[in-house]
Length: 141
Image (tube, rainbow, N blue to C red):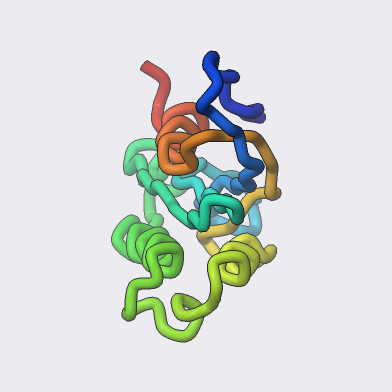
């Protein structure tokens, strides 16, 4: 998958380890087909937990024309709310960052599922979340 960010030149940049997982939408769990619809990024050293989500309705309809895009978008937003510690996220949003990331990346058999956790190095976890969204979720081009 996506490896670590390109190294930077100069003396100021110190890379920290981060973890990430792709949020997949599996509209028909029994078929196991999925589209990537978001990324979760956790960097303990930078005290960062963030998400980026994008649901492509055309890709979703290609897998299941009857999929409830509104409900799926709500589920993706719920994951983003947990990352952001939004009060609407309930008890999960009140956990410490690492616990929230582990909760969000725990295997589940729902329509929105986390992929495996990967690691990399970054100097800017928010920018890395943007890069991973572009690389792994958004349509090419």
